[in-house]
Length: 95
Image (cartoon, rainbow, N blue to C red):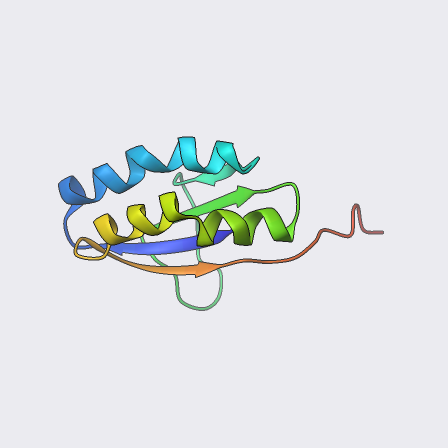
């Protein structure tokens, strides 16, 4: 999963952020990018970007659709606007 967010209430967002690592771990997810320095070389961006790797596409969707994550989303809705994408696959090193 990859998402970028615009946070209206950083303090209110923290309960959402604190709940997620355990949820993602349950589905085999791990953070590859979680904030940090970035430059939007082209297009639009948000103030913070997160990329989470899952064992496969089905695991990412299962995590997103899980009761635990859906509950977490409800805690986030009033505090932040999020763009969330689930991508399938990585073809390995490219020539």
